[in-house]
Image 1 (tube, protein in one colour):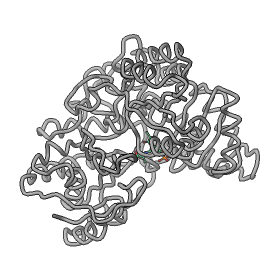
Image 2: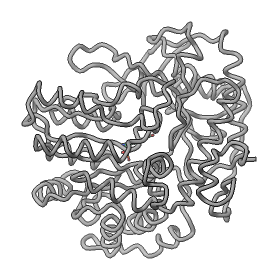
Image 3: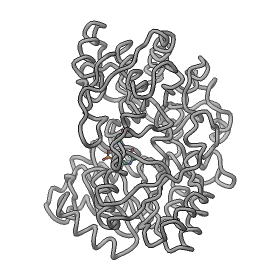
Image 4: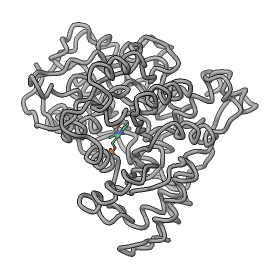
Length: 471
Ligand code: F0G
């Protein structure tokens, strides 16, 4: 089945046409679809916010790929090897080795998850009044930069904001935009460039090796550091291997390490690429930055040899890092996302192109051109999809974008999207078929659909807890 939709290049690279998962299933977790009436009650009680649903009321859970992956038998075995010492756990040293081997950074600070590391790097480097340029915002990343007194400035290429542009590296930094910012505010006001690979909010879009090299040159001219959000960087490496000249015969591991070599450090939500249910880290090359971060971690996360993780968590994570950079794993992972995306594309359903690494992003503007953005078209679409089929997705539009801290108005992002995020090694191709049919049913009913009004709005990261009612 998959051979019809996988691009030739992927098959050729591996010497055969179709991909299959490089694993078989040893344990299963039952799931069930509750009735339409029960779904109606569940989504109403959740204030039309899929974050507020109980997971038992969900059939296929595509809310996020964060912490939702299936661990391997090796990782589960690793849990039994947890060294739960408060200080100096052997599992910490395994983790440190794995990060050095595959990412190449010198110093490691473990954290409980990605935002713990974002907090540390933001607090360590940002002064009030600073500017942090980046290739599109991510919700928690930007918030920590703002809480540290900084202002995030989007310097991604324009194509990233256009869901129909098929640019192969829509995550690239626009170096002219960056240089204009440097000239306007001065390099001393820019503690670092916040570079993410892949770019979540743009649709899981990659950054090219050429772009990060050119970025390094520009930043060196002004003495500006580059810190990488490496959360889905193994997936980014896959796109470089597939699309960039000179990388077809390099392994994911080699590409990943080369990419990281152009940056000064990275933060990581290990809940994604690294195939664990909890965990994160910050890794840097500069001993002074390390010193500050290692001191802050004991204030906010835990001792610098566990940072909020248990020993067993660190062991599963160290093993997950090695599994995450295997070529056959990444190929099947991205292959499954593509399988879903190509079904939808064939049926004429508007999604962000090209299909990214971790998710399919439905273009809610083109589903519901009759619903104005302040009636939350993407929030509406996510609720409708759940109602139709028990598939849980996530809003990535005006609700996620939040309010401008200066003016208090909604930010109106150009991208008004719903994310169908595929957990790693969890669902089968049949689940993807059912999901595609659900999206089609909601698309076919699009003209009758009305928007929502927000009736409760929390101060920070409102998308997690906001409540809505039907108009
Ligand atoms: N950076 C990126 C690119 C992310 O996608 C996330 C989390 C984080 C940082 C923060 O990491 O959750 O471990 O604290 N993204 C999840 C998502 C929540 O659903 O996309 P965290």
